[in-house]
Length: 606
Image (cartoon, rainbow, N blue to C red; front, side, top):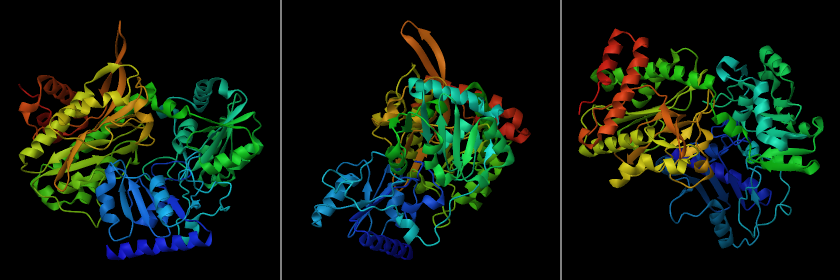
């Protein structure tokens, strides 16, 4: 740890020297890339390289004397360890009394006697309209011109931009052609589409629109590109590294009237496309917004793409169901191993994650993991997004829980599942917590609700039982999942926080995870997660109602359950779910596996 913390201090000092040469009083370093991606290519992992904290979410702020890092509750324990002795203060985002980066920066620089100061930020990595500091800071017009990326100067051997090949995502998996999707976008834009051009920078939006997939970012089958679309002509220009394009992809683009130019030449769109107005989705980078607004009429809009992606068509829904069967087979085979003492005694967290990946890779249409597997034993399970590394990996023992959160990318669907597995004797609190989490999971999965209810309203179902006993969790209860796209997909979420994503109406065709959890710091964690699909339920005098179809197919371990805490309704839901799991998976298993699954899905007798 000492060597790593010294390296972090050295890198921060190098950044400060770079700042001083250009008269910057502070630097803001976010976690994203120019496209606002959640996961990013190594080239854009500037915050992780600078601070040593490698969680996927966080913002670092560096002044000439101080440094701080903000991250949410998922990563507090991880960040606490990785930032130790680095001189960087951990700011627990969302806790009472914790200042925002803007507030902290203003206070820090004011204390240093800097009434006016300039803040460096890479305009490629900041969404237009975001301000790094409050009123009173030197205006953007007065700031020294700096088109440089500090990390090009201080990060020796910075990884280059990736160049993974792009492939066509066949219509038999996508369900709709490119031209149909362009019509959908035009329809969603309405009058805004007439004589306008839309500049897309979100990588998942681009991949979905063009029925293409790539491999530039770990776990997400997307590629670095910009896409300019012209309406009503429904043609466009894809700005991408042409080395990535196979002959099949080039033909696919030609057939859909999509020209190709180099990735770095995205500003050429202004000259190549004549339109009365450019439409830029909120979230577009400050750099793109600045370049377009200099010579063209620009208007920011709420992009219609996230909602169009979120509404899975019939082909995509069928693909999810098939992918879940193959994924369920892999999970069953791993869970069988975890019930054998000799396997448990010979394994570590990383070993289990590796074995599960191998089992999944045997499935048809497997394309890779959908995120880094969380294989968290015992106290590591209390770290919400813990990922085992060679430095943190621990052996399993025949006691406590193994929390296993994992998922895969298949050409016909994306999976995300969590099971908490007892490896031996459990304490009464472990059994109680497990049962409370299970009750919350069931109550949400069994919910019937008015069409267009918000995620903020649905969240209570997952927390009601645990709140009654004084437990809670800090992360969201559910997120959308892409169709062979990003495992975290908006715009809808289920969580207790008032945010834009929790005020998105839920309608048929949306996917959402159901993943309540409870985490007892330093001891254990429990999470149970399935993927759900919103479907129509009934229509009454009071309107249309929806329910959830559970897509994930994998038994839920009943050994830790305190059966006296389950209601009859909850027991019936478990029985119905397990009957469906057995019916769908049994034909895909061998005789021994079927026998094991039959025992694991036996009905609860009340």
